[in-house]
Image (cartoon, rainbow, N blue to C red; front, side):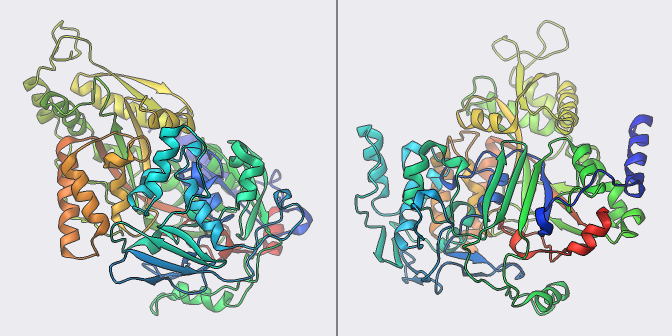
Amino acid sequence: MSVGRRDALKALAAAPFAPAAAAQVSGPNGKKTLRYAFEVAETGFDPAAINDLYSRIVTSHIFESPYCYDYLARPYEIRPATADTMPEVSADFRVWIVRLKRGIYFQDDPAFKGAQRELIAADYVYAFKRFFDPRWKSPLVASLADLKILGMASLREGALKGKQAFDYDTPVDGLRALDRYTIRFEFGDPNPRFDEALADASLYGAVAREVVDVYGDTMMAHPVGTGPFRLAEWRRSSRIVLERNPTYRAVSYDAHPNADDVEGQALLAKFKGRRLPMVDRVEVSIIEEVQPRWLSFLNKQSDVAWQVPFDFVNTAVPNGKLAPFLAKQNVQMYRVLASDIALSYFNMEDPVVGGYTPDKVALRRAIGLATDIDQEIRLYWRGQAVPAHSGLMPNIVGYDKDYVVPSHDLPRARALLDTYGYIDRDGDGWREQPDGSPLLLQWATTPDQRARQRDELRRKDLKALGIRVEFATAKWPENLKSARAGKLMAWNLGYSAASPDGRLSLDIMATSHKGGQNLARFEHKEFDRIYNLIRTLPNGPERERLFYEAKRIVSAYVPYKYHVHRILTDLAWPWVIGFRRPPFWRDWWVYVDIDVEMQSKALA
């Protein structure tokens, strides 16, 4: 570590003892306000058009799905949200009946022309159909198509071929409102885990047709749901403000923590029966650079340090224990091995790194073997990660901690390239392709200091292999758009689990998800066959065996290089009460409270 870097860390460690004169109580009129920062910019708030984590955190608090996850139950429990009861399911898992509560209303909006708009079954039918409408270019259309909702594929195909507007009024056998409050889903294949989709409010929340008719292509900026919060202010890639939805129904805090969950039992005892949400306002800042984001917490401009930046985690939590300067201020610490993965992908359609011939596979394998994951964990992740060997994530069905693939092995990587003709023909120290043309990688990245640290490690690994690399810089949302269009050669990014089922982790390799989740544009018939079987089988030994076979195929072709599963550390000032990071779901703001008096004194 350089002297300058060490001095900067010392200065940051001392920062909490300096006067926080710039910090102000941000909530107007003394309202309870939760403040924190995202490290990556959002893309928007239309559930049919998004799939990034940060946008989904916001939409999960605006929209509501029929079911939700119990906030305190571990590993998880699904319970009714807008549904009146748990779903009625046929023995073959092909038919699901959902009955809604009555008297739930959308937030007030000009689209309703002054009328109070009740949530009905047709709103969910409409919301699901929107994913299939080509107009919205949904990145999730493949996920919905995988469900094989009877009639939806032909309805979408008609809109694509006929180049006409998608017909929402055409009856569909697999997606029907039986009456005002009852929805019937029917699938071509068994769908034993459909309740997990029905519990994802960030994507599958109810949308009113009138709202889409009014706002059209500006839906990203006009989310209107039945949930606890509504969008009050949005400055793209800068600031998001939500406020309590005044028309939100009476919902009380209730949960089912495990009997041995001391913290969970204490939270339930403290909050049981309290009306939700307990805060009036949530202010989210987009702070992509790690130092300003960390300082915003130390200076009490953020109430929660959602995922302490890895550059400073050993200052805040040395050896896994809260640093004394934070402990003296009663800062709360939460640590968890996350159900997520950091990875690199290779565009399988790219002429340099893509393809399925032995030489192209050898190139990707060599790049993977040259990647020093242990060094990356030590220097980039600051020790706060464990190696990842497949796309399956900890704590979800299909994850196997004993499944491993070959790790850092530079001699083997060099030998692979030599064998398949990637050699230095002109003596300049850099390898050429087997046909003699230059071998130059174009790696996408983002314009922040944290990304530059990662890029230097990548450059070092590739230099040791004799491969040149250039980094193409763009904002994260722009890279995502280019990746989905197949325009990037390679990129680093992360995925986090949205449900307890590992099948969704395989979406990124399925042919049906090309242009959506499958950024690598990987295609493999045997993998697709296994993927479809995994989707329809109930949990059990046969399904676990298929997960293993799917992982082996991907390990053989290397469309992805898996890096790490992160160990996440969250911090909260003592006036934040009730925080607990959700394992899979996104909605947590509604379950926390703010001690305004304590917050005001700390910021005075």
